[in-house]
Image 1 (cartoon, helix red, strand yellow):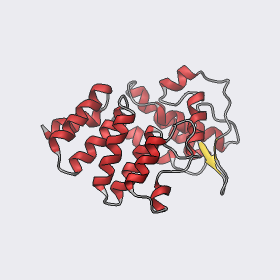
Image 2 (tube, helix red, strand yellow):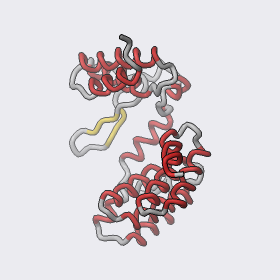
Image 3 (cartoon, one colour):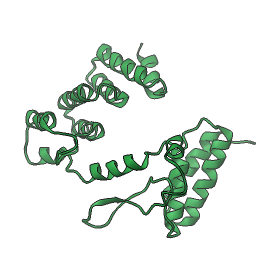
Image 4 (cartoon, one colour):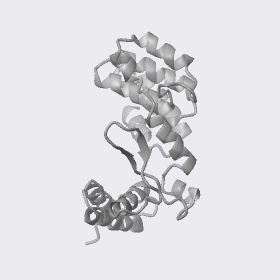
Length: 222
């Protein structure tokens, strides 16, 4: 019996979280089989498994999916050989380009917006920091993903109305980001604002027709 591609993908995910080169090597084999059966499958997990396998053998990664943080030191990109594959190949596998990876490292070492909350800042004060900051110069992560993560942080605390303000702000700062609208829609639905939530999901789907999650939620709620 031939197993469906998703079975191989799910098995690869388990081995991907192993602790040695044997497990990572198995993840690579399973993901290659998954992609062989379904060439349209997301290839990021294969790139990550290959990188982990190489690093586990004290060899440099080639895609650039693995980041490391030692004790209290800063985040850094794991050792990488940049000569093996091109940025075009990285993008084909859903991996950031080398320049994007360098920017990601910088962003990972910025302060999180949740630290402002921990200092006792109000949501209005935090929004003020976001609006007044320059994404290139701010000491806080006010990137699209940084703001989005803070929104989910608030939702996790049960502060859904405050989260809604953050998600809405993110759509205003990054209107072309399909994920900002996706998250905004999720929060609206959590607050039982169904019509507005579906409209946000439709905006997300228009920006990214491959957003199957948004498509599913729209179909379930219309």
